Image (cartoon, rainbow, N blue to C red; front, side, top):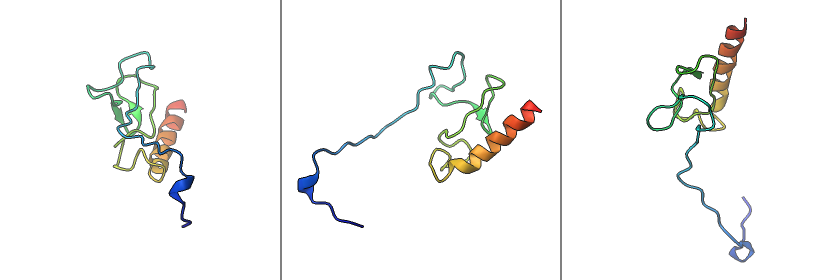
Length: 84
């Protein structure tokens, strides 16, 4: 890994405590903590609505780049079955 001189750094941005906001969805789809209520990505509150990349959707890594793929495959399969 290359070293960076601190003289070259003008600012450090720290983003902590990020929390997704689903209020833009017209309908009650979240629990009291603000997370979508789902079963394998399918909303239990609004049929036909699917989520992917939600914290702890199926596993601890569901919201991470290296974990969302497995969940995305399951959601895609659910959507395809619903459309058939």
